[in-house]
Amino acid sequence: MESLYTAADRLERGETSSEQLVREALDRVASREEELHAFLTLLPEGSLEDAKESDKRRLGGHRRGLFDGIPWAAKDNLLTEGVRTTAASKILGDYLPPYSSTAVRRLDEQGAVLVGKTNLDEFAMGSSTEYSAYGPSRNPVDPSRVPGGSSGGSAVAVAAGMCHFALGSETGGSVRQPAAFCGVVGVKPSYGRVSRYGLIAFASSLDQIGTLTRDVRDAAAVLGAIAGGDPMDQTSAASPVPDYLAAVAEGGRELSFGVPPEYMREGVAPDVRAEVERVAAALERQGMRRREVTLPHTEYALDAYYIIAPAEASSNLSRFDGMRYGPRAEGQDLVESYHRSRGQGFGPEVKRRILLGTYVLSAGYYDTYYLQAQRLRTLLRQEFLRAFEQVDVLLTPTTPTTAFRLGEHTQDPLAMYMADALTIPANLAGLPAISVPGRPIGGLPVGLQVMAPPLREDLMFAAAATVEEVAAR
Image 1 (cartoon, rainbow, N blue to C red):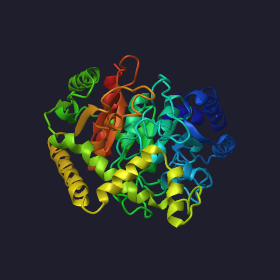
Image 2: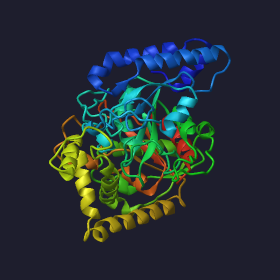
Image 3: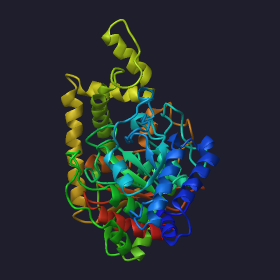
Image 4: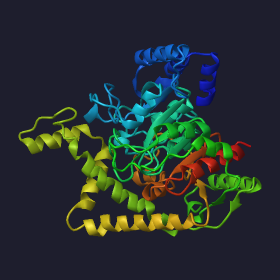
């Protein structure tokens, strides 16, 4: 599918209509959805109505801007007023939100046309979209392989041309990892850059809404549309949003970068490492300056994450008890009703993380595990900040390998968790990070990750634009 900008330009020139763009998107859904299962809810009638309204505005000279009339998709843990939002869980199978998330509302106000809600790992807990209560999504490049997770449905929808862009969410790599596996661009903004209001919480100190697009320029535009402070989210940053499109246009040739050796060690496939080094050498030829940096605490990031994130999940998911949300399973007393409702409503991976989180927060283990993990998180953030005193951005692989086969890791949680080993540090440190497609390996996409200092998405986009340019050669 064409980029967001190409579609918007054709709309402006009168070469197409929003209705035609939406019909084309829905036709692609019809042709591949049964195979790929990108969506949990489709909105064919509503999206066509919105498209017709957009066309009327354009004819009347009241175009709302770049996004007016452009088809897009939202991960199904973003609240959409009056549209079923399940978080891919049985416990929310019939939930109709009374309001929309801030990110969704901002796109709606700019005239973007929502075509549907995409599949994900249940409550965003997973790395392959195999943990959806409604069945897995499949990689459009090779349907025998996973699309990544937890925003796998959003990545599939963009990669398969079912929409021009999509929103996902990130807690430990859930936008960048599927972007890498499916060959699209995925952005995790700095913590606080995008309001979390209306995002179903997994781990509140880590969650961020991110973007999935065809290219870096589109990513800059979408993030610019949803970024900014929000009085409904006290953790959102009130600082001004830079001109990301100007940063993309400028490029990163004047910047310096580092390739931390901790991201290139055993466990990262040799051909993935080789692709990063190929691009790093090309960046140097473009004038970017490579400097040595090291991040020794990175090797402990995965351990810290799988203490902090489950602990927060255990707290956040306590509200889903079968009384206020979802189906209620009756028991002999209130406690048994809770047990049955949650036992039947939650899938195995969600249960695993709730149990782990409850354990590390329990008396006698809180200091040993949770506080130690938070100390490590602080050390890791400080380490990143010191590295950014030496370089403008960091270049690493996004994932240790290309997409693995469906079912390959479902019986081995540790192997599944390792798929996020290179993305998790940015979440713990609150950094902005982007995955840009590199040269395919064995016919499968590979992702190149660029990280920047907190709230410096402008640097991230400038460098990513140059990475995108040289990686395609």
